[in-house]
Image (cartoon, rainbow, N blue to C red; front, side, top):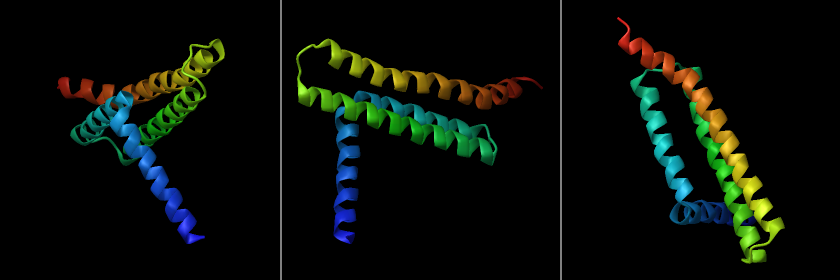
Length: 121
């Protein structure tokens, strides 16, 4: 039982490593995550706001991982351009786009007032 869990965790880490090595969107997400964490520190956001930012980062990685899994699965089925495969990929990518828009709005509610207050004496 413990060996099974160890193997599952190892496989999961292999998936994360593969995604970071091969998927440009992971690198983009990591870049913006680092900027967000730096901005959180620099702007001295509250603990609650920081927890929210960290949650947004991790949920974004989860959605990107699911999107990548769907794309890899459809590629394993066929690399031919089929309408049903295109729809699956487009809808999967749309989930990340929708999330990114929402996460950006939430981050804006946290960061923008603090940035504005830096310029108001």
